[in-house]
Length: 249
Image 1 (cartoon, rainbow, N blue to C red):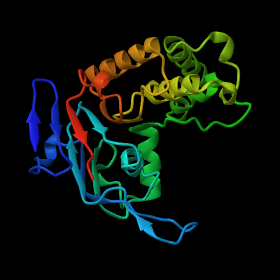
Image 2 (image 1 turned 90 degrees about the horizontal axis):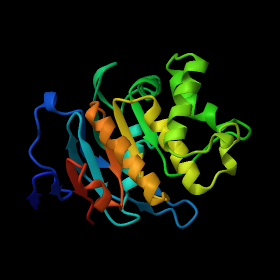
Image 3 (image 1 turned 60 degrees about the horizontal axis):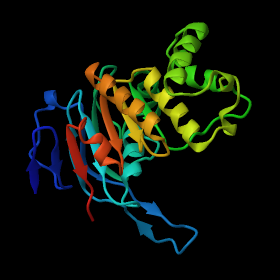
């Protein structure tokens, strides 16, 4: 069932008519991801099956649904943190043209992550003793930006997201959950990826930080960044969203 509004299209998990390839930045087609529970009884579970949707350039595409239904798994399949069981994830890349992230080589995936794809997890994974400023600057340094220039850009994002300057030289393993989330967001936005994947970007944030993140998302959209996010906070994102995709069992 399709429900059309002025700003947001709310659609079910059923795939619609295929769009012309030139109008797609991302096409997820008949995607399946299975997990085997080795520590239980070896059973296989699939949070979703035959999942299909299309994301156009410059869109904010919001995926929502109840907890445990597979929202984060979709992002990890797109980013290739998880290898999909079957189906295709066609991405219209600047580096390689139209490429299937399911079958792409590891080398191609690494290059795409460094140049075009960004992923913001809910949870920070950082090496101990590495300062927050350097962790934030890392995506730019990987792209060849000089260390001092990258650190200057990182300081801008940390300041904007309310991370006190006295914390910049501290390892973020000592940060609160909300501070770690803001650091993750700074890392995601600093490199201005072509396709940005956000996992619950407003979770664990206070009202002020949430409003800043929504501004950042709106500004990124205005610059042409395509954003796919999973979120329970559809009320906050609805005004910015181009499509709201409900996952249903």
